[in-house]
Every structure is written in structure tokens, then in C-alpha cells.
Length: 352
Image 1 (cartoon, rainbow, N blue to C red):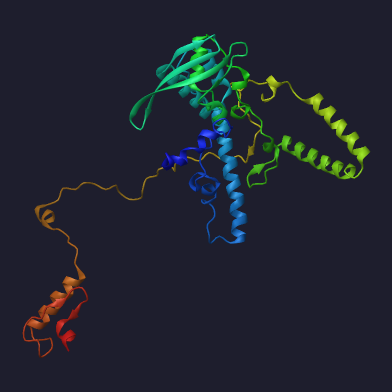
Image 2 (cartoon, rainbow, N blue to C red):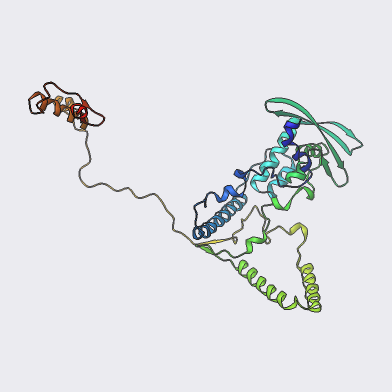
């Protein structure tokens, strides 16, 4: 058992939320991301330039993922209302993960025990390294709030409801998932605070929303510098800010919605503004000058001629042999002397 000590740690971290992060390997960390832009020989000037390129790359990929979530949709594979609910709320990748949990729960899981409607035991047929194994999971379920805690702790660890709870929801005919299982971090209409920070990359235009946010931040910073040294002014300003925060806080159910539009009808268009580029197509094909090539019928003599490639070493060796045979070579070369083709040197010269 001591040899398997590397697998002990996840047992203690299952009830803790890690958003699915279960490794600290270098290849799966942020170091692997920056390896595409910098290396050990990168100078300080190059590092500053490449750091901006790395951040721009992350921003572009995030915008592409957001656009895909609003413009594309994975079709539902069941008729359960909860699948349609998650399809409209979650991003594409997270909906695919939920869909996999729902399907595998219906295929490989079954409720084998229920005590007073609060304690369930779900049996799952698992495939571990090619071996079939049956594992029992225990769920503490509250029928009033429809909230349960499974012994697999998938929701607590990854933020995704597990297949064992989904089997119970289907058995109890619960159509919609409770709000506690719909995490705001996986929603495609979630507004992130850092998206309002101004972007100064080439070809990117700052939106009006980003300009307002930047101006408010500068004003708040100036106000904080003025009242930080006075306790009375600090308390007064802090109380006023808390009052305004309570007044302008939107309801919880609409805190993630962008404007008044429905997420599936219209995508976010004010996330970024790109410099318009002309459409780029394939180059136009044009006719070459002169008459086109024709397959002219060749005579027997033309067909018999074959152009071969001449090897320089063989040609040089043949010339030398001809010279030696005609008596044009050195006086001590009475016969044909072989050549070193690898170096082109005479053997007689090598023996001198």
C-alpha cells in the first residue's frame, strides 16, 4: 500500500473545490503556455514583447471560445428538461461534460437501495484499466431542497453534478436542476470583471464600456487617496459606497445575463472591436502567354532517346582511365590504376 502513496492525496482533497485541477506537472501548468513564447536565451527586451504576445493569445482564444458558445450548440440526446436547461446556460465544453455524466448515469448506474427517501445507494459498473468493477456510491439527499451529497464528491471537486445524483433526479422526476448545481463560472453569459480592462494591443479598439470602467477606477482611486488618512471621511465614503452597491446590485437570477437579450438569440457583440479587414480569397487564375502545350505524337527515334544523368565521379574516372590507356598519364603507370572514388585521389600518389 505504501507504493501507492501518490494516490493518497486525492482522497483528502475530494471535498475541496479545485475546478478539476488535479496535477502540478510542468507540462500542464502555465509554464507550458509561456514556453511557446520565451526560452532560456530570451533577453529582457524580448521577454517584454513576447509577454504581450502571450497575453494577447490568451485573450483571443477566450474570445473565440465565447463566440463559439453563443453561435454553436451541441444538440440534446435525451428528452429530459434538465439537459435543455443546461444547454441554454453552460458553455459548449461544460455542456458536453454534463451530457456525458447524464448518458453514462443512465447506461451504467442504477439505484439499489433507498432509505426514507434521504439515503440512496447507487451502483455503477466501471471499467478500470480494462477490468470490469462494480462500485457502490452513497448519497445523502434532501427531498425538500433537492440537494444531495455524493461520496464521489465530483461536484465539490470539479463543480459538475455527478451521474449518481442525476440518476436520482430522473427517478424522482425532477425536471430542473437546483440553482446550487448551476455554477456561475461555467455560464456562457457570465461577465468577467477583467474584460472591462482596457486592451492596448495593435488592431484592438477600446469599447465604451471599457472607457467608463477605466474612468471610474481612476476616480475611485483619487477619492481613496483623499479620505484614507481621515477616519471620519473614510467611514462616510465607505457607507455611501455600500449603500450604492446595494442599490445597483442586480437580482441573482439576472446577474449573469448580458443586457435584456436571450443568450441563444444574439451573441455578445461589444466584447471587442476589431479593425475591419477586406475579405481574402484565392488568387485569380490567368492564362499564360504563348500556345498551350500539346501532346505531339513522337517518332520511334525520339521515343528511344533517354536522357540520363551524368555522374561527375564516374566521368572523371573514365577520363583518367582513357588517358592512362593512351600513354598520357605518368610514366610509372603501366596499367590502369584504380581510383579512390570517395576522395578522387590516385593510389600511386597515396603510396608515395
